[in-house]
Each structure stands twice: as structure tokens, then as C-alpha cells.
Amino acid sequence: MAGNPRNGRPYRRLVDAQRALGLPCWLCGHNIGYNLDPRHPLSFTLDHLVPLSRGGSLLDPANARSAHRRCNSARGNRTARAPARASRKW
Image 1 (tube, rainbow, N blue to C red):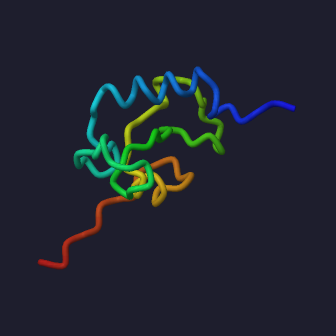
Image 2 (image 1 turned 180 degrees about the vertical axis):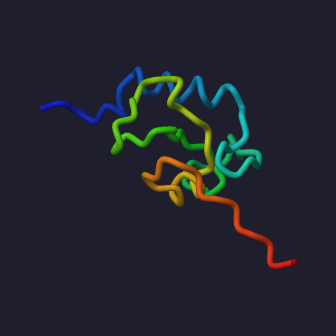
């Protein structure tokens, strides 16, 4: 029986490389707290541009993005970003 591929060395290298870039969240554009507890909503998580459930590659660096835990969870397995909400000040 094969183990979880996210526990493997190649995946951890990808996560570490993405973290080292220090990029802002690709979903909301705000800075990520890279030193926060991993359970914090504004901490770093590795997001995939094309979700794994939709055929995205787990280990492809071109498919990897930095995101807040909250933004990544809210996006779910949708392929596109949710459109920005319209302002009510019109």
C-alpha cells in the first residue's frame, strides 16, 4: 500500500522552495505570515493552481502557489478565483 504522497520528500522540497520565495497570497494579494503557527488562518499553505481533484500535478512547481490557509480553504477545488465583490458604494 502506498503512503500519502504529501508526506514524501519531493513534496516537502516543493513546499520549502515555495515558502523560501516569500510571496504574498496569490488569491487575496496580502502578505502571508510565514512564521505563524501552521494552524493559524493567515499562515502559509501550498495551493495548486489546478486542483489535484481536477487533474493538477502534485509536484509540478508551475502548479504551486503560496496562499493563506483561509484563502486556500475558501477556494476549495474551484479552478478559477472567485470574482471580487462589487462595492455597495455607488
